[in-house]
Length: 93
Image 1 (cartoon, rainbow, N blue to C red):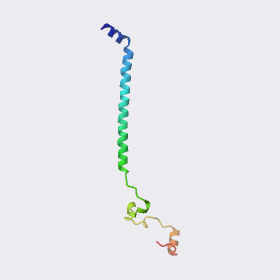
Image 2: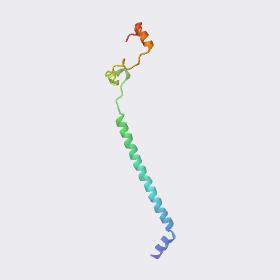
Image 3: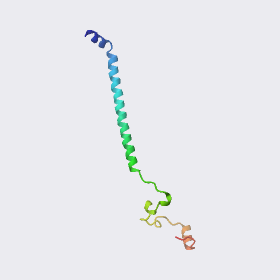
């Protein structure tokens, strides 16, 4: 037993450094696991939120853009040029 105690006495610093190193490396790997898990969850949520079915441009309708529920003529400001076009009946709304 004295050989064992003598070895520990001579190498106490190295043993302590090895234990600290093992704990630090273990903590880093545990932190990386948590970060990776959060990243995967975030990517899955974003994929779920922004997943939609693609349509060809010829198949799109105004209801796809929710344009049927509002009157776009009241939305825009009229300009002097617009009034001239309407008065001269060049512009057909």
